[in-house]
Length: 80
Image (cartoon, rainbow, N blue to C red):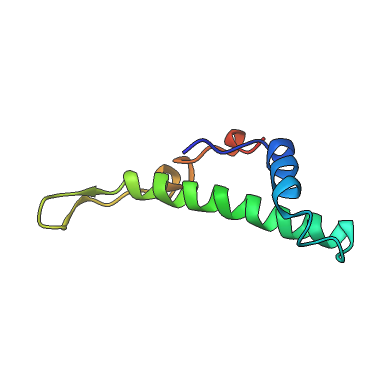
């Protein structure tokens, strides 16, 4: 799943939702769009964090991940 940049996301979001939001102010529409953009990144970050969990075939943790390992599993540089 490739996540668009903030600029790409806003352009795409506004193109698809313009007719629904014509009565809304631009500021409100941008806030709604940015929330959706944040949700994309949170979802991706949670998937990445889940991938660092070391679990065996029985679902038991082989090794508990460290806080740093989880935090660094999704670099902030991914948000553009």
